Length: 99
Image (cartoon, rainbow, N blue to C red):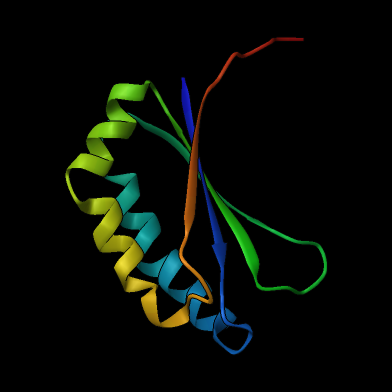
């Protein structure tokens, strides 16, 4: 499996707008991508403006195909007016351990 963590810092006054766009536009678009397993939004416990969008993919190929298709750039562009800084993406191979 492959994970992508997109670190997002939002303008404080635009947090509600960010959440709306994420839930109404980004989630449905990512859900349609081949090989997506999970998409979650991580938020700090205290009310803040920093988020991590966690996506889990079947494999690296599908995650990279999503980026290469331009869909990630299009979705990030939808957030442009709410962002406080450029998003940062880190990708990881997932080594799963069962308990």
